[in-house]
Amino acid sequence: MTKPNGFEIPDQMRDFAERSVDQAKKAFDDFMSVTQQAVENMEDSASVVRTGTSEVNEKTLSFAEEHMQAAFQFAQQIVKARDLEEMVSLQQTYLKNQMETLGEQARDLSDHANKAAQNVAKAAKKT
Image (cartoon, rainbow, N blue to C red; front, side):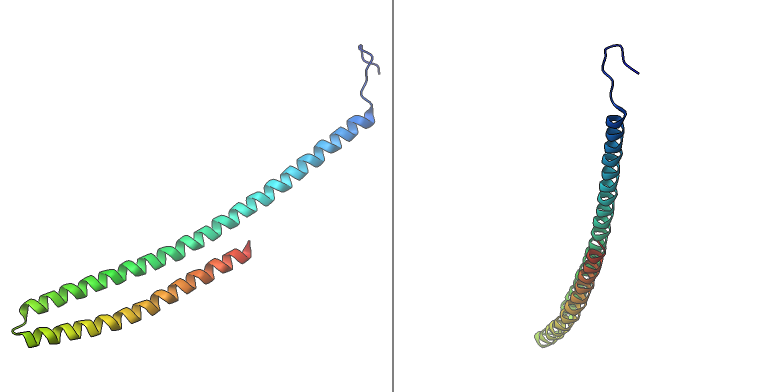
């Protein structure tokens, strides 16, 4: 069928154009699917990082609170000391306990940090 202006698009050209549009749409849909999956994987990894960081931060805050409580307790004991000898003994005990506590807390914090790093690595492998 001829158009009034004398130009008709051949069926083959229309079929080719239609297939091209379909292929382009499929390529775009595939691209968007892969992109969405990548974003989800990044969000999962970020969530794991946030969780690990949050746990380490909570531990650190808890340790700081423990140290402050110990310092206040030490201060209360010092003001009640009867002589210099008792003050020195209290200070030695306090410092010894603090060093032991710091060692335990450092190990605990290190374990939590390692666990968080392992979880991040696992999440990254999933991507």
